[in-house]
Image (tube, rainbow, N blue to C red):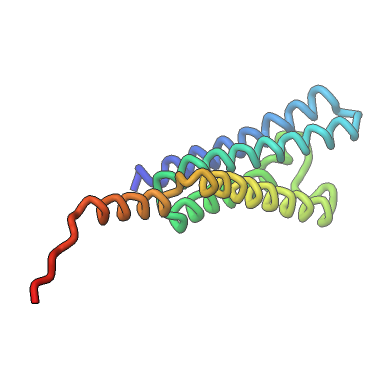
Length: 154
C-alpha cells in the first residue's frame, strides 16, 4: 500500500509547495503590483501543468491508464484542496476573501491545468508508443511471431 500512495502523497505535496512558493514570491516581492501577481499565478499554473505532464508520462509507462489517472487525480484533488483552503493563509488572506468568483476561478484554473497537463503528458507518451498498453501489445506481437506455426495434419 505504501508503494502506491507514497508517490501520490509526494506529488500532492510538490504541487502544494509550488503554490506556496508562488504565493510567497507574490506576497514578499510584488505585494502592490497586481499585474506581476497575475503573472506569478499564471507561472504557477504552468509549472503545475508541466509537473503533472511529466508524472503522467512517467507513470503511464509503468501502469495501466486507469491506475495512473486515479493516482494523478487523487494527488491533484488533495493539492487543490490544500491550495484553496490552506494556501491563502500563506499570503495573509482567507479562502473566501476575494469572493466566490475568485475562489471558483482558482478551482477551475487549477483543474484545467491539471487535466490539460496530464493529457499532454499522456498524448506525448502514446505518440512515442511508450505507454503501458502499446508496450503490452508489442510484447504480445513479438511473442506470437517467435513461435513457429503449428502444422495441422489431416
